[in-house]
Amino acid sequence: MITSKPSTYEEHLYSLIEASERYLVMTCENRSSIRGLPQRLGDRFIDTGISEQTLLGVAAGLAMRGRVPIVHGIGAFITMRGYEFIRTDIALQDLPVKIATTFTGLLSEGNGPTHQAVEDIALMRTMPNMVIFCPSDEEDLTMGLDLVLRCDAPVYIRLNHLSPVVEHLPYSAIGKAEIVREDAEGCDLTILAYGLLFKEALEAYGILHERGYKVRLVNMRFLQPLDETLISTIATDSRLIVTVEDHYIHGGLYTALCEVLLRKGIAKSVLPICLHKKWFAAAPLEELLSFEGLRGRDIASKIISIGGINAK
Image (cartoon, rainbow, N blue to C red):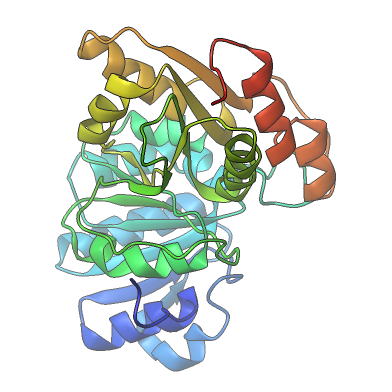
């Protein structure tokens, strides 16, 4: 059980930076998650202006001199404009730069596909040494923040400021997922989710559970490295595994899961609930989730409609 609630991301980040001189905060004129830090950090806060490539190159240089930069920017622009710099300057050198991105997945409300990073995990998964951290809410984010900042690897973080909908378990290690709900009598169905859509997956779990389905719900937390021990375990008792994510079908959790199952020689039915390689219109978040069929009730309906999994 959690005995004390973590603070907001900005406050928790500040407390960690104050405890170690190695840390500094950087941005390319995107301060949405760190508005109060420039005045408090002084010369340990660096803003390079609208220049993602410069931001990442400077961060790499500072990391080579022993610092741990936590860089902030819009996910779509950091991962695509800065891809070569992440690849060559940071990942190739295995530098401990932490890339904290906003407006990832569908969180850039109303801005549409130009600002919504729905390819970012696929891009970052190609990077050797890269850790990918995708918490389900702000509490989950702050609980794991110290762990990912202290690790020696480069880390890509999907920032998430949503309010928690469950009481989270403590983090044990990089790459370990969190089992949030599990039927004591065994599970025919396992739902794997992360980030924004974890809340919707929890709603789907509730609907399915009420209808008598034996369901396990997992908050993945990390997309790289993936919790392969957990995947092997759930594959033994789950007749169906469902992946839920605000990312394109290629390169995200669905792809990563299938790669693990294939490598381990496990044949399993997998249902991907995600974005299926099409552009989408700009819309308020609630409307967009409904239009794409990503609400909890939609997820539950899709699972029920495929058949093969029986209620109690």
